[in-house]
Image (tube, rainbow, N blue to C red; front, side, top):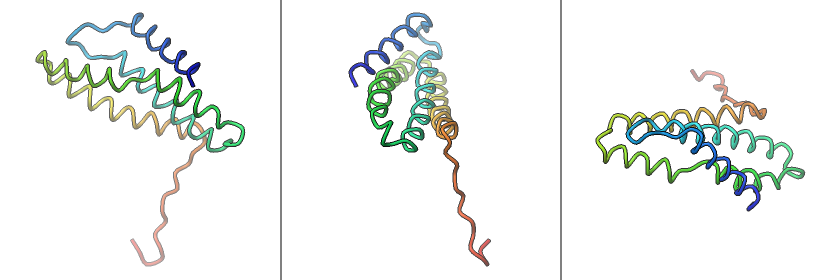
Length: 128
């Protein structure tokens, strides 16, 4: 798990250095990191579910370690608070909305990419 965490934290640090965001602007780097992490975690969950006996280690190394260190709820939260504090309320609200919507969509896309297929309930005879 620590090995995965080291890799995830290093990747996150590198991206934040290569794609810095100015104060008061939309935090695109954190958004992209968190959305990518949500997709990869969805994909991992589905792959591990299908190959649990052979891939259970991946849940800890990649899911908890690497993706846990790569994505960052604390940075997201701090950025929202700082945007609001500095008078960029509309940017903060847009950031929260985009993070939630894109994160959920990315996780679902990861599950689908891993082979998950939703099962929609079929109404019983006589139900509409």
